[in-house]
Amino acid sequence: MFWADKGIEMTEATLELAVKRGRDLGIEDFVLASSTGYTAKLLVEKGVKPVCIRYHAGFREPGGQVMEEEVKAELESKGVPILTTTHLMGGIDRGLENKFGGCYPSGIVAHTLRMFGHGTKVALEIAVMALDAGLVPSGREIISIGGSGRGADTALVVVPSHAKTFFEGKIKEIICKPREF
Image 1 (cartoon, rainbow, N blue to C red):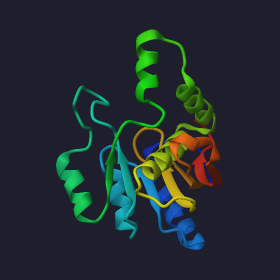
Image 2: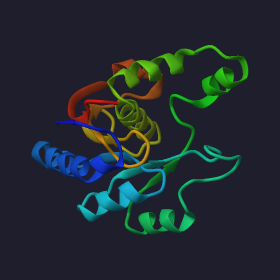
Image 3: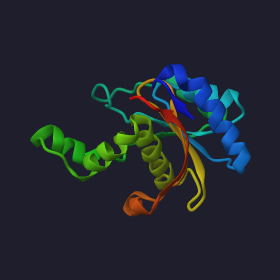
Image 4: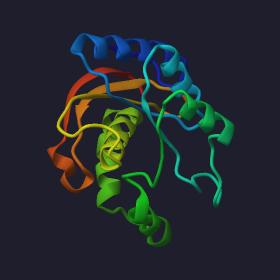
């Protein structure tokens, strides 16, 4: 499915398609990006307990967190693991870019994936982050859901590989994504 637009307006439909495709394929492992918890709560309401990847501390302001602690606690009380860590394609390379300019290897990978849309980059990135944290199984298909800002507009079936073997990962299916971005 290709959405005519990107963003939060696509969230409900993206989650519906992701859950349906997961059930069709017998996939039980879901990963999603959720900065405020909004998208994670919606997915939980659909009977899925995803791994929720939130922004790392300091994403918007030094030491600050975008997702409120009450929301984090609510999701965790429903059995949703919350991963808070440096973004795979950010990290030290982002620090070098910010300080010295230019583009470094992880930035090149990120910009290449954004050619398919920001949500595609996010979905693949968080799948690897969840695998590296031991929150999804190795070598199995998972559903990974990302977006272009707030909400979700992209869902993929992926077999992620660890960061150290990133290019061995596979995007098996694009369930949905924005056509325009």
